[in-house]
Length: 142
Image (tube, rainbow, N blue to C red; front, top):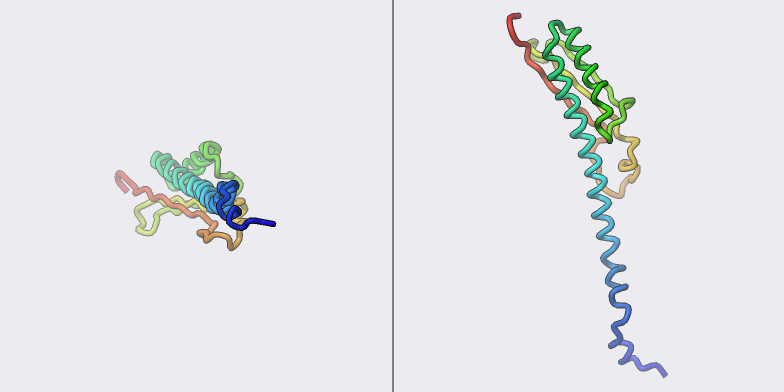
């Protein structure tokens, strides 16, 4: 016959039960941190590329030359960012900018093919299109 009182006092296996409750939550938090770290790394990389391109475009004397310098800077530096694929990066430049006295560089990156965005409805995610801009004011005599 089974003694139920000794069964309730038995503590062997308690750690396994506690681990079974805690491990999924811990792994979900850990996986979420890694996923959002990759996303933030890509966002930061696109912003840095645009900022470097804006700094490089300052040397241009005309809008066409500024465009060439900005695109060359991005092409030269995109390989140093591990979360960014150069084929998915779209660069546009606007001469004159919104105020007419600036040169604007915009980079749009499609991050939707990343494994992070394949999770579907498991976690709320931001827009997979990363769009960053930098503006350089015209200097000197116009």
